[in-house]
Length: 74
Image (cartoon, rainbow, N blue to C red):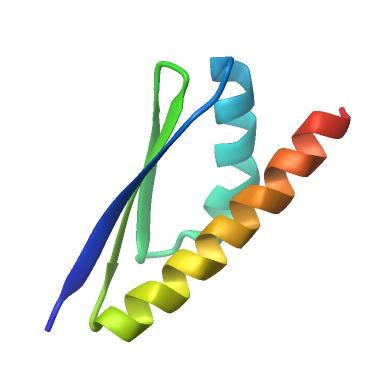
């Protein structure tokens, strides 16, 4: 069974969205397709099962959180 979800994260400026995406896109591989639209980061995450999707989503959001903290410090 295939499982997928879409995540949108809105930022105050497109520059921050682009920096966050650049910081995390190396880990996306084939599981995550991400792009910037205006000031938002849009990601589509796909997996072979719901449990795997939840694990991937958890990892992705953790990476986004770390990237946001790093971007905010600069």
